Image (cartoon, rainbow, N blue to C red; front, side, top):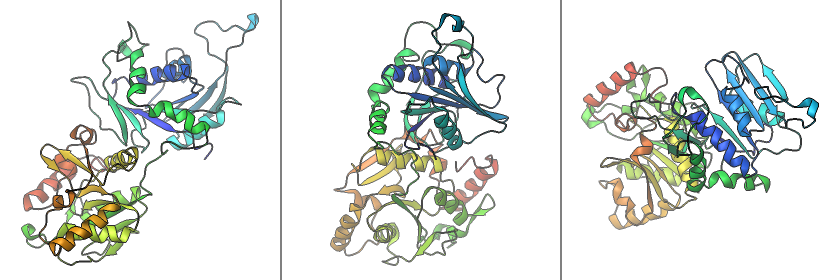
Length: 428
């Protein structure tokens, strides 16, 4: 990878939500502050790649140093060079600025498109930020644009820095019109005020430091799946082997986690059932979920542990990555990070920091053992951070994301959801 230290931020959202408006204003605003920005886009189809009025032309006019576009039929990347000043070489309004152009007769994944853009950047210019519109299926941090009331909805596909609702957009995707508002020119200033990360990246890159992870796939975190439940309300069934959507629960779960984490522990009954997951017996047999958390934290050593219930069939890669990113942003200012929706918290879809192990061992010594204790009893005296429901719903319905296979009714519902969902929709 070339110059991979250059950070990448995505702008995602449903069709006609204002993504291009947001990208254009960010390019213009950050460019005034001296930040060299590369602007990329993925489209489903294109009529022209750099014609006046197209999205990439708007990116160039706003000040992007490089523009790039990929679509099912090809890829286009161009460096936007300064207009010549000689009278005989003046470019008239509406004409294209001179550019170094690279074309491919096939679409490109985001990683390749970023590399092409960095290689195409004008000599002597070190890009400070790559902004990419779309690419909702990639795990890079993003600004997610919410639809207007009554508009189409599409879940965010990865960790979200923040969400925005544009209050003023130009008709038919044209340039912004009217006076500045939170939906146009004022939006970039608002983002910079609330998210100084964007402004801070330039200095970090210039000093050779990386202030924000380019991707957040969990190399500093161990995943642990607790599979030791007795399944009493399901007649003693081993929930780890139940089939949902034509797959055993073991494969549904590990198929998600093994893509996100470099180490996955299966605590309880086993066998692991994955390509590289490790099966662990409980340190304290029959001690319930707290015993499973104790086993996982002990095995993880100095690494944090993201604990999952083994009977959740609809884990979301995107939401897991979002939680990992929120953990990184908090700079370790938590012991437990978990989702909250309505009156519920999800202690078995939660991230536990290494200090929790000593705290839990102390509680167990005082209690005489973890059996029969609720997980939330662990939280007294710990720093607990919550992922709010507004974040959760960007990635799906919490009643589905956190559905547990506890009863025959739960199993029937899960199988119905799996049948109705498009391929991959319930585990993006």
